[in-house]
Image 1 (cartoon, rainbow, N blue to C red):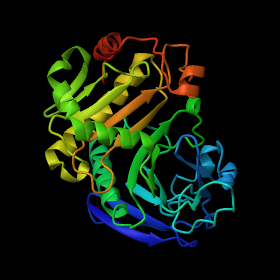
Image 2: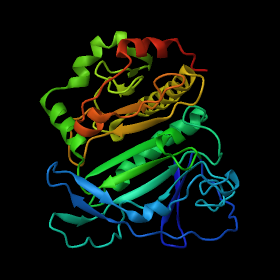
Image 3: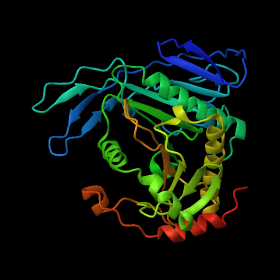
Image 4: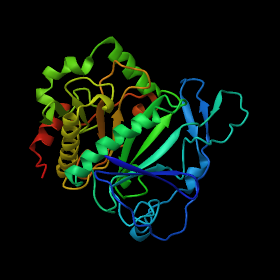
Length: 339
């Protein structure tokens, strides 16, 4: 994998990734300008940090395809590229955050990083329709961003993810994901770390997953967890535990990339339309070794005409209610053609 780093007019970094060395043809265009990140406030009852970033109300909202900032000539001022990563123009976390106001509770600057990962220069597509080589490159880009972001002293947890579909509030349809590099470890991750420290849970579960399996590659399995909280929720995990992508072999990376594309295609085939989802990469926080890297996908659709909305018990107290049994969801996804 080859990388070129370009400084944008407003000081943001643009990282261009490719399989082979290449030159880039610059395109004319108006330079875009970054905004300052907001600040953090700690919830006194729940003990969790909340990000306040009012400037994100101004971010780009459903532009015409000709005005898409992720197409060539926008945030990436070149005629063509393979994968591009750049600092978010509307950051929730940044190296230059504002100072928090004086309040009767704990506050902190929102110091960290918020990056955008553009999967392809093509405006249409998805993780499922990317060429296999492009998806394999993306796995290596994620691995590289983990490495670079964990070099920053203020970063304790790196979280790549993808929001897909207008149904969950996505405002730019160009295939892309994001990476948040937090100055703290989110509570959900802290609970996972404690669970993996106590027992190798996914390793113990592995021999019992056959009824929940969706598809597999050598050493990598996609399955509906028997404890799924969303209809048609799918996890991808390697058989051997890894704290993160950094310890994957090249073969494991390729298998994981291929499996990821197939799972997205199966989800899209389930209701014969693109499945809106949140895709969450779960790796160990800084310094944690006992962890089992995995990917969690939370689909938004529960039937052809029905979306999955969070109800009062789910939003209010975190108790989920699921309309589809995990065994039935796995069987339905197994029947889908991944073509």
